[in-house]
Amino acid sequence: MEVMQTYELRELAKLLNWNPAHCKVIVKQLGADPTQPIDEEVAAQVARKIRRAWPPQAA
Image (cartoon, rainbow, N blue to C red; front, side, top):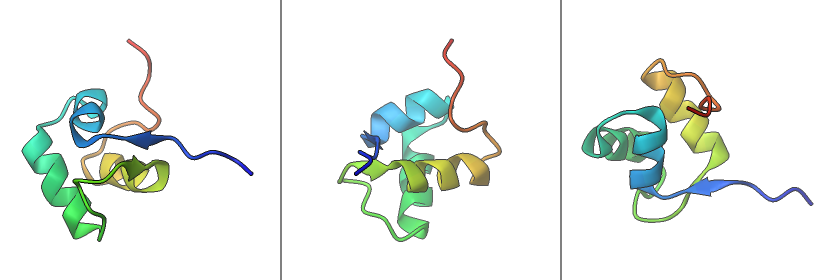
């Protein structure tokens, strides 16, 4: 079984270089709970919505 990567809201916002409050709104719109770990699939959807590359490229 493959282990899915999960992200905390702040961590995801930092990876996407995006405002955490805006990320939270998008996560909610996608039907996920922003207070819980955000899975890879939802993170990728957030990235697409704000036109960011996914997975993020290491700086």
